[in-house]
Image (cartoon, rainbow, N blue to C red; front, side, top):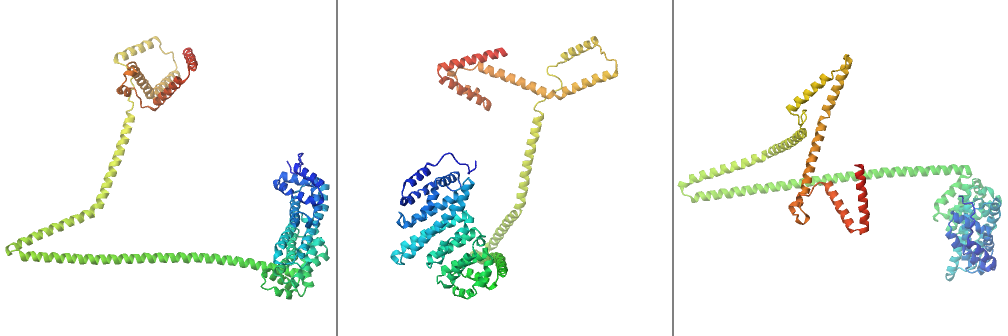
Length: 592
């Protein structure tokens, strides 16, 4: 459903507010209109309820009353100029979210109501500006001046918001006489607010400079150039420069006017060097040096191309520098890592050489001590025993050499032995796997052995059956006289015999399975018939009547739970279960 459709339900808050406004005196109306803030907060802009509430404000003439109230002198109203700023904000909220259905109402709203609302808002700003300039600039009165300035900027922001929503109002805003009066003022604070408003208005409607009178254009531009020339405040000069640039940007013929009408401006602008808005100042100086709109446009494009090229080249240079930094960092890390590795290797080699030197010295020391001990022993021994001692020493040395050599030989061949052991283990694993596979194949083949001869066919039975076949052939000789019939019968018999041989194994397996099941049932029935009473049951009997099969255990558990459930039920439910069991038994009997 479209948001334009009117809801038959009216907002009681709007109705009550309209009734109270009608019954209240003029001084009390602003305080009542402040209640619209809560109503608008509960119905946001753009929603169905928000559109309905704003339309009802128009239908009940609350908007018209709000615009008329703005003409009052709020210095005698409760809340002072803060009430005026709040009412201006409420007016902008309602105007931006309203959506009227009738064409006549829309025309009246756009052509009559909105211009009057803008005029009244500027009237409020003019009164606030007058009040602000009346208060002396003293430290004790700074709070009052700041409060008035906040209200002043709030009202101007409401004008900008309304212009954003209705761009066709831009010419009305610029043609309002109060705007030029506020711009002509010498108060820096109020003038800066108007200069901040001008770019916003020009941004809303870029064709607004073509719609307003030529005299008004020159008046606005004259005042801006006057602020640049005479004023000593850098913030005012910066705002005036931005306004001039914005006007020349959206209205190119104004460039020729500025260059021809204000020829000495270029020299005046030099006093604002290093004032904090050098970028805008340079752009204005370049525009004045160009002399006309076409040259200024071409120079602007050239500067834009230069800026783009500068940014692009800077980006490429930064990318290359970033890659170079990464490459140098990687090279340095690699070089340092190699240096560390080489240093570590040198240190390890140095330690190894020192260890080898110590081991060599230790071996020399041991050898020297051994020789000294041997000489000392020879000196002690008698001459007859020296030869025998030397022979024993030689034998011990030979044994020791042999032991060391055998150990070395074993250590050298241990890798080959490991490989042989692995191969031996792998061969064992393979053989074990092959044997298991062959055993499975053999068991699969021997799982069910059968012969083509039917079970129970003895020699006497075979002779008896052969006699019956011979007797049947004699009594019923074949009736076929043609060869084709005989071949057909022979083919049919061969197919039946082949089908018999194909299904013979499965048939015998099923028969053996049935026989096994019957034998098992006979065994289980015999066990159940010989089962002792529960009071005489022992662990041996429990093991005998227990089953490890999961289906049987599950069925037993289910039956046990069902039996316990029946035992816990009252007697009248058991009667119904007995009747159902009896009916099931009768049905089984009938089916059987």
